[in-house]
Length: 112
Length: 114
View 1: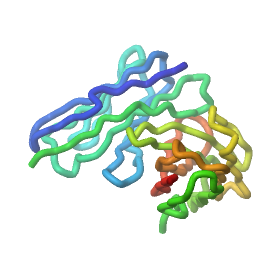
View 2 (view 1 turned 90 degrees about the vertical axis):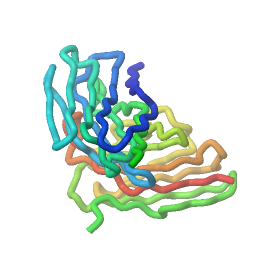
View 3 (view 1 turned 180 degrees about the vertical axis):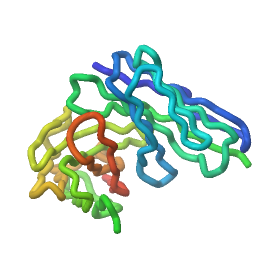
């Protein structure tokens, strides 16, 4: 079945540094969404990517969808303590009736 | 105003008991979901309803039974609870079915089975 993998599983970042988390699917996706879950909180929608090669920015966050629509990345520049949390990608295949397949998540810890 | 609310927030119970979790959304959305998040934070969809109709029914034990009395409510009843059912259960909603709709999650219900 479809699998969405995320790496790394854990990311320790010094405040002010940049980091990237990667999402890979075994099958082509119709679109991909990214969510952030703060410690003890619930997933909150960040963004959706639909087009092949699409790049979207939200302040210090840059999201990219691969040309083959099988992978995606989230790059955060100048990490802040407010970036702490787990970042999930969630992919949808064309035949899944909108069912989101969540990646395993990247847990981000920021050291001041 | 809470968009998606769940009760209870915490649920501690003994093995073998039956329990229910309730979910309500005031966003006017047509589609609602139940997710299970295990101790490793892996999020897995369990069920989805669109306007009271079951549209996604993943491979979950039939001890789990969702019920949607109207499109603003989706409840989850669990029979004969087992240790492995311990997890955080999230309810979510989206404007409509289909892959292009963002999902709004409730605060979660942390279920602990002793």
